[in-house]
Image 1: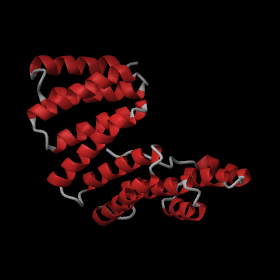
Image 2: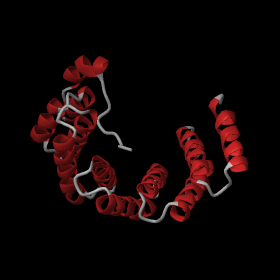
Image 3: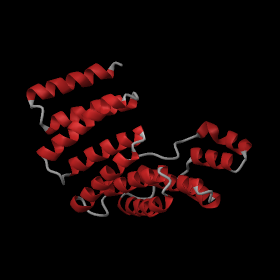
Length: 212
């Protein structure tokens, strides 16, 4: 509640000082939208993200990395709303931009691959998600190292995919590699071993996460 008026004021200032179509205004729009999304106020967040994307498209171009980031933000919001059909083309477009502008092995490209894989997974399309996760891990481990937080998240995400497919042995290997206590808890519950899960709960960590 305290952050909301501050973000709104920042947006108002930027609209008055640099103009409603300036990229700096788009940043304030995005910040306010992310806050509304965190509050569960998707109806307030959506037009802000849509407006931010329009600004980037016009101000920096349809194939700029900032436009890709805005697409990623909008797609993530649609995903949170359960509007997967709206999220999918935007994640795909963000990935296409990052591959073209930043290169196929750039960490931001890996982030787009990860987010697209997550969407496919929640849609039940594990066959489409799997190669994206594998490519994500390869890029991040090569460019940032296997101990980078993004690499650990990506490996844990792959574990959740195998958990959903009931391939518990493979899931366990990835959860242990990523040191995901939360993943191991979910795995023990899926195996019908609540006692083991209970021992791990105090150290629980997220089993999946989106990347920026």
